[in-house]
Amino acid sequence: MVVGVDHALEAQMQELALRLEKEKGVEENLKLVKGGGRGHAERVNAAWRQAVQQWSKSLAERGVLEQQLARLRAATVAVGVGVDGAADLVVCNKPARLRSEFSDGVFSIDAENKVLFTDTAGKVQVVG
Image (cartoon, rainbow, N blue to C red; front, side, top):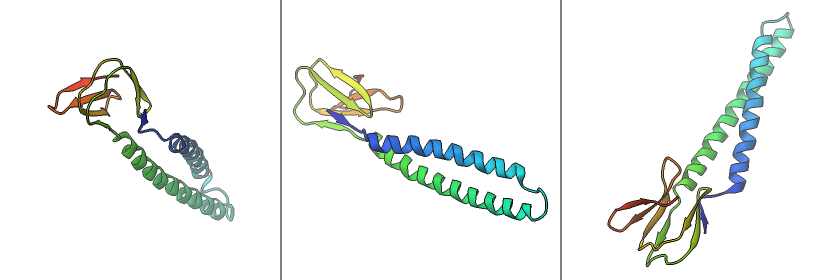
């Protein structure tokens, strides 16, 4: 079972990170060129403003994607009766090989990227 994974969203985030790096490089290069000769300065300033605007839009897009990824990380698997026997579970790209019994409870992932099982009594066990 796989939960908390969206390969398309992760690929989108990687592409955006590359685009942000490129856009920031363009903005920094134009910033260095700003203040050149007359007439030239206006064109460079206009290009620099446009680069900053595009970079700002990309930063906003990154914020939206980060929120979506955060929602994915909040994914859990609720077990109503129990898990008996061998099972493989992937939570947010972190595999957990279940080779023992688990009563009713919830599988989740913590801030350190470990798969946890919390039973109904609140006892937490690291699974992966």
